[in-house]
Image (cartoon, rainbow, N blue to C red):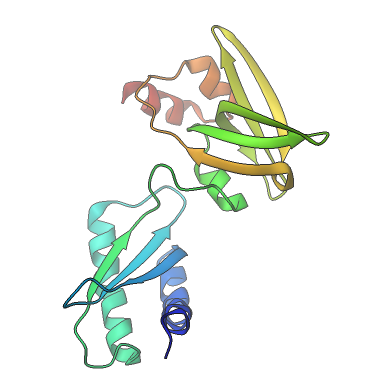
Length: 181
């Protein structure tokens, strides 16, 4: 079996158990450093995941993989992770889960390319609102997801302003949590 076929089969076997635990499968990768085999599974869900939850999920997925016999008797290491900073936002759920976070987005407007650093506002299956902050001025731009060429979440060490987070459509509790951290 080719690595691509095995990757697809692993994804097929894990999709239902992940959904039962409230997770989406984002990526399966098979890494083969000398002397061992590593299976990397990238998962995500609304609200994120704690380390304890990921540890429990990892044990459950390892059991599913072992029972499936896809990997045979060969030993493997299972790495379960969530999407990190710098991963592209490519699906509507990625935008929803990134609400309030800082992104760099490249999109087209009337055929012209535009790149902005903004916070992710409200989104649906077709568009996202980008919240641009220039000094103390806040501007929102609605962009069709189909017009986005590339977008990635950025590392953000700044404490975002309350007005910007409010423009992102976050709840009062979420705004307070983000302002405290």
